[in-house]
View 1 (cartoon, rainbow, N blue to C red):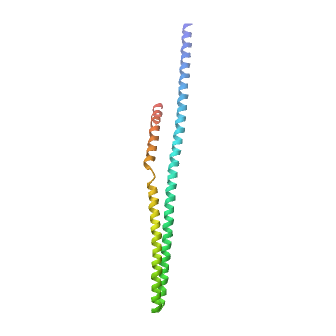
View 2: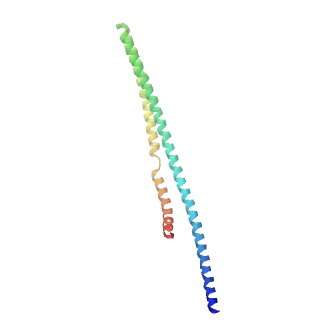
Length: 163
């Protein structure tokens, strides 16, 4: 009978140990779930930061490209006007040629001045856009990523140990 009692006690102790082990496993499973949710949130946050930064840089670059394109179109128009005046000069006699050269010089000078002013403005805006791009605080972004890594590294080690 004592043997039977000891076997029952052993069985009860084993059942208690199994129950305790199961509680620990449930606790670790909850922690694992929380850590995975935190990791997912951090990844989404990083992705959003990178996406917003990329959109900002793209918009700045697009604005510069549009202004340079406008300036080039103005320069092309000035060149076309110059070519037209040159053709007109060839068709005119000397007196008309003198008048045409004067007009050509005035128009070309005005067109070049306008193109240069527009180009100067575009270059200033391009420089401002580049300063805005330089203003992105890459160090703070790297620091945030490093802090996230510091938080996740112990968790990664924990999960490697628990396997």
